[in-house]
Length: 87
Image (cartoon, rainbow, N blue to C red; front, side):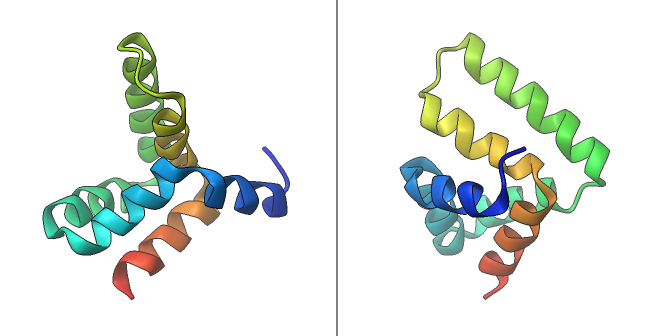
């Protein structure tokens, strides 16, 4: 895993990640989906995200979108996203 300061910089540079969070703050249905994922026990959340990432790669999804979803595996990132969605 990258050091947290490198991760924070890459999170902010990932337009898809930022867009996903902003959209979730505006759209209740999207926020509920993210909340559901983020509230899963760690092992279940990571398993689900690994499955999503693998499926997105098979379907040739944009790399930055795949990375945006993959960031949610990290516990610190997941907590910060939950805080951002609540605030």
